[in-house]
Amino acid sequence: MLKMKMFEITEKRKLNENMTWLVIYAPLVARKARPGQFIILRTDEYGERIPLTMAGHNEEDGTIDLIYATVGRTTMLMDQLEEGDCFADIVGPLGKPTHMEGLKKVCVVGGGSGNALAYPLATGMHKHGIEVDMITGFKNKDLVILEDEFRAGTDNLYMVTDDGSYGEKAFTTDKLKQLIEQGNKYDEVVAVGPPIMMKLVCKLAEEHGIPSVASLTAYMIDGSGMCGGCRCIIGGENKFVCVDGPEFDGSLVDWDELIQRSTYYADQEAEDRAHVCR
Ligand code: FES
Image: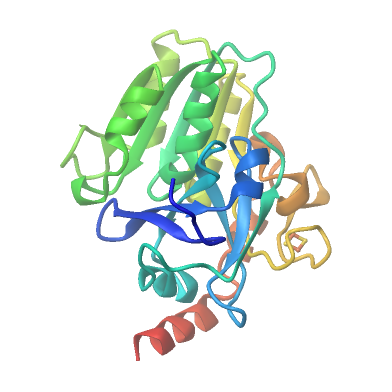
């Protein structure tokens, strides 16, 4: 590999209109990264810090993979960066790696852009020797991502869309219910996606006596348990997504609080987006 600058973008690939895959030179992060962990980055020294789950890493090349959806100010600025450009800083790996010990067969359920987070988790489990059924749900065909990668990196892939324009016309919960009722014995169901989908997936797993895990996302600032920005309530106790998570027992998550908290900054975010567009 040619000599790279620290945090340089070595590859950039559009997955669909809204989602992008980046490969970034970050050798110290790559050396310690494990599936399920995330980083916090800034585009420039005055930029906000945003957390992103690593989609993969290559210790030999010293690179990490990030997949992001263009949803806010920082990701809009990231869209403007090209191969050869550098991020101001990247901190990580952060958070606890995905728990895999003792699992034989799992079902991972990804919804929308959450499939980008589900990808390292599902393929990491598969590489670990766990049998992985993967359900990917999207609104429609145009939003589908990572089909080849999921097919190659899991045991069975079930693709559903809300409108039936690709794969089966179903919601992820319908597919999960069907797979459970067909007699699949899962040691765990893992949900990654919009909070409402994760809530319903975890509830369904619970109804069938299957342990569930939810991979949560949250607003973050320091990523070290100090600022309280990523607080969530698990089993009635305050926990921090950055240090206690990002994965939690789905049956213990206070979903209503989490859903309410995820909309706290909606107005400021809309203002920020408009600012970048001007
Ligand atoms: Fe500050 Fe988690 S990001 S406590």
